[in-house]
Length: 456
Image (cartoon, rainbow, N blue to C red; front, side, top):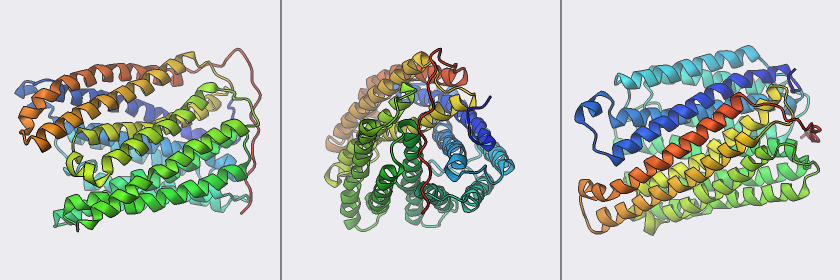
């Protein structure tokens, strides 16, 4: 029997399962990329499966499994938040089929050279059209569910705003522009404003819901912080996009405007950490499943360190002038994406998947192994990439040594990164296996207190 309030929540399960499969594929492709950096491969092998193809698969599969997690999480939390079933489960399934078909076709196309060549947005235009259709179906389903619900809450509208913002920003990355600077200007509208805008709003909304359910903290407290965090994310994130503009030939004042506001971007993340700690202290419920709470705390701390502090240090204008586009960027990117969004999706999965299987309290020993291996592994991986990036910056941009010569010195650190990546993959496999085979604990636990939606 499903431990859920509305049967339409079941549509989210397939979103979660497919996301987890893609998570493993993304990590495997990442390992292959590290091999390319760490060793000199035979040219015949490179010709068959070039670095560019592996990178396309690695980055686009990342986006695909993140979006599947967001969509599935939205479909899971929306019915209880709105007090009614989804407007149309059939639309949700149709959207899933269209999105996955486009993603799978794109990956196969990459293997045969069918690509636009635009970093992170390599999917060809026809497939982009299918993704837009899936996005429109998603927004319509979410909007109609909220509109037809009798109870309204700030969380609902924040969630709808986030997913709409996400879809609208994607449109700017679809066309090519004749001027390369113009093309990259709008490219950053997708890349940066997704990560520092739309995705952050969705993250704050979903985490707010899970915190209320897990802790029983009063809704007014959570929604107050939700307004503050979302406002700061948008305020700092939108202007902070400017720290990229300097590098595409825009006026030099952008490196300072963008740099200053990028420096302010850790503020909402700091508030998220404080917010999470307050919920721990003010909770009215015992923590039924500690592992779910591990992921919430891990998300907040990693968000602060990876996306916040490391991003802050890296994007300060006097530093970014030398480090831009180096392996330091890779370090920041891995820590930020894992901390902000991979851990968010895993938090959703550990909150929702046991309930969808009728399990309230679950056995979590194997899951804890997966949590600690992946979180520690990614931290070490980010540290290794950071060391390689500092070495690269010094050799190439201070001593003016050529890339190929400098890379020979960096290869040791990429071999270390490959070893750490194998450990991280083991943690991911353990986590995915645990989620697919999760079993009830022998110790029963009561359901947490539910805070009803407040009418606004």
